[in-house]
Length: 167
Image (cartoon, rainbow, N blue to C red; front, side):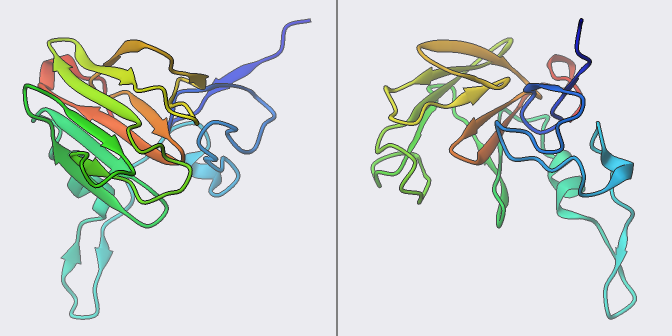
């Protein structure tokens, strides 16, 4: 018997169809039935002054033509440019991007841009980075538009318009 599977829209993990929550990034499929298997743009919001506002996710989706990463946590959505020499992520203040979580290793991950995506290199983290639902050990090219999970922080690689898949 073959079980039907689905893909998590946040981290790309392959899951069984009946799972309501992704075990890789804790994405909740049951949160909103209209967003069950894909991320849809949210309708514009209207602030108290009657002005249209753009949802943060939509505003950040405009940035991806530049090489960088979209950093998403439960409380933060931000975009960080990645220089040609790359950058390091971890808990230690000497990293280019500091993630303040005790689950993140002092030196956790290194990202270096390539023509096809970001080369993500695990720096022997205690809790490994997850890519497509699996532990990332060593180095792997993460295509532009694809994501990795660093202890609950989702990093979506952004890059040249022709090189990335849709966010």
